[in-house]
Length: 315
Image 1 (cartoon, rainbow, N blue to C red):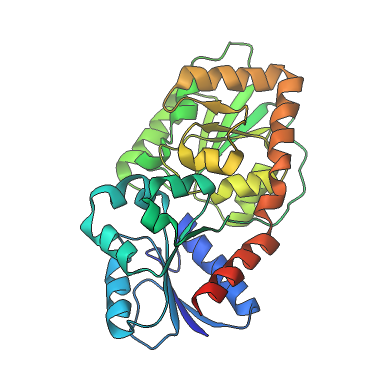
Image 2 (image 1 turned 90 degrees about the horizontal axis):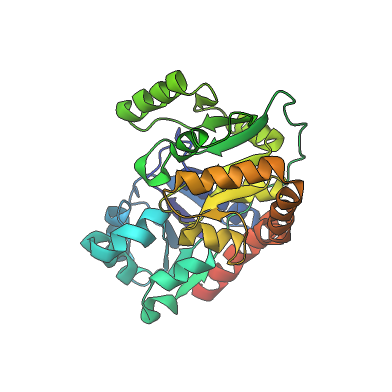
């Protein structure tokens, strides 16, 4: 088939939506399809549209559904779709009505949809290629945070937690990700000035982020909302334990019985988990074991198979 993938993230973007679109395009090409990735649909004929983001891609979705009402349209719901926009935004709601099938990135996402929409929604978990663990830094107990600096990510919760660690703690936080506003950049620089254990490196190439992740003792995902963070897949397939805010998108990735959750926006609870991971090797191994048991869910093979199955349903 001729497939067009629409994502609001441009060609130079390193956002999760862009990475997902590019990865899916690769899988679909391996399955024998011809694929174009666009920010806005250019109007050229396609046999199928796969759109990411109900609200931001609504214009392309509406145009394709009008031009080709009998051709399949698949909508992948992002974190801001699931946990905000579909509740009140008319464009997001209209996009869902026009989609023949929808995708969520983890099973908890299904719970956000009414039964009528849930029946035509499938779970496609984001994969990550396995990467070998690297030797951790000997100078500290390094904790990484990987994600762009925006409100939805609650980006400075880990920095806030540092004030609640004992003076003897060797924990240092390395934060990777682009500041999405000048205010966020200013806050990051202020945090580095006041907290010597926090270091923000800004946006780095993906290969470099994977290197930092692979050497880290722990990765923290502090988000207020997540569709299903691919960085969690990367941590799990790299053998890096995770500590995460207890929000549905993280629970869908890590499981309901995971031991590494803290209440959203609670830096004291996060600090307690970090201190325990640093000092209690049994607890750290438990987190690693729980993450490792989820590893088979996030392989490229399963993600490609899920996409192939979905295309078979609609074609």
